Length: 315
Image (cartoon, rainbow, N blue to C red; front, top):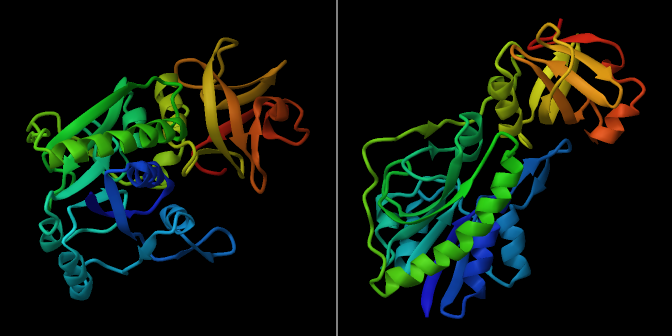
């Protein structure tokens, strides 16, 4: 029986934890996750998705503020785990933690390394127009996603793919691949492969400014930006002082207008870009819920009921 310590925080990590606890050859003895944080408009303390899942399945949860705490390090080392599995945990691991498990620390990373090392690989892959991405199982070292690779799986993406869709696909693929790889590593059947020196890119953390739409760009660039930031933080634009988030679009024909022009055309909500029109399929107005295409058409006070100019900053 493989004794595993699991470290993860958001919902992306839950399918991997699920795959581990359902395998009869693996025992997840403890779960590490980030401390409860204030979230939402009310800023109430909220448990991580991993903590909620772990407690529901009878697992013991530890929530250290930092793994730089020597007491936490000594606790991990004293347990003599066979492996530490890390999925979007959100904390830096010291060398003495990385070196403590017999098989090392395995990580599920949501890209085909060495492309898109870093914090936001899903968003940056879509934004850049990549046609393929995937998940990589790697042995962790002290670098930023620089460890040797053990296994990969890939999927196709296109300009209609959103981060929300990609997140769920890769979360579902990463768990079974991690379990399979961990067991192969235990039996000496998985050989670490160093990452190539060529093709390295960094998926920098998303800023609010990244999500502000510039309608003067090529419409394919705008489309990828919108889908990359669906659901968070949501690509946004301004109709005068009204901030509007846009979550889904598709290419559309129609009259050529100045970039950023927003209007209703029969059963379509259209916006022009530097190279053509897009149809808005899902958006959100201030203080409201996300609106689907049908809901937008019948919205009586929305900006598109009269032709308006969208901008990157309020006018």
